[in-house]
Image (cartoon, rainbow, N blue to C red):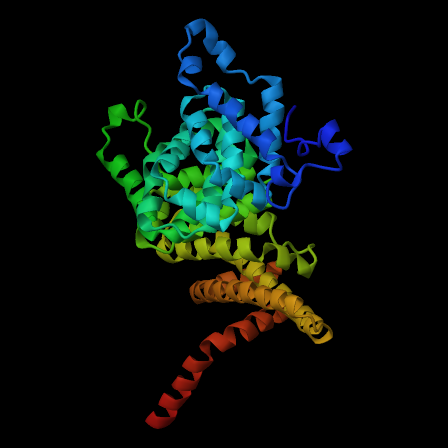
Length: 453
């Protein structure tokens, strides 16, 4: 069996009695406490000292999970999505049992299922708070990040993300992730597992968003390792550099998982919110060039293309905001680099930025029309959220476009008019969007000019 089956059906006796007896039910469900106790007792026996102390001949057997036990524990995995069941498992100290399995069992499938059950339980706030206070459980789960089994890594990453998403981590808790930094460097052996990469990205994204100091430590660790490590040791002790890791992961998820690409672009954007992060991108010419080339290719050949409908912007607004933000930071910090020469990048970027602003006008008009014909509060709330993300994208796009315009030469403008990247209609749209950002400056200039005259 590959994945979770349906919850356990009632037995024949239970059907004859009209269902499970009320005293044996878990909360308001029809799941049997007696049956669940039996499964948990079986788990305890698996990791009991007499079963774990076995000869080398039994090690291969320990890697396999009995089919009947797998079926039953998978049912518990499926059931644990129910809050009543999750609370009952917590009351019965099931997390301690799962922790014992993770610490002692050598069976990858069993470890995967146990982490998966804990992930389901973490979806509920009360349980998440309780689990967060158990230091031992946290240490065992973090140790699972070193597991070589991809499904177990996937469930561990999912658990970590759900945990951080359900409860605001104190700084001291998020720093426990720091010693697992080597996990990110070794993840390259699993790059074919796109789902795993997405989950790892979500965890790192959430960590960096919650704890800027931790993000700085990750950045500086890579920088210091690169500076301190002797050249002759470079092959034996690979240096952790976060930007190349993010770029490689983004390339892997690019075609198969757009949401995953959005996550990794946001991680890059978070790096640009601190000086050390920008330096990590641009201080090494190759890293800066690789970052620029990937993002530039996304803008020119993938996102918001000329033959795309304007409404596509609603799907791409968050990833576009991240990409433009990172490109803008690189553009402002490394204008002298060869890959940023005016004639090579400015006109394609201007074309893409203006198209985004034009499509944004279309989306905003459609949003306004929808708001007029819609009276439901929930949908109004969604429209407001859309407006918020579009506003962020507009602000970033206008700032980036303004910086490019300031660096344009007459020759580049003439070339743009000749090739079609610039036109009266496009320039008019661009200036209409830029004017609100500079109207105050223009007004002040007029006032100063008037007072001087």
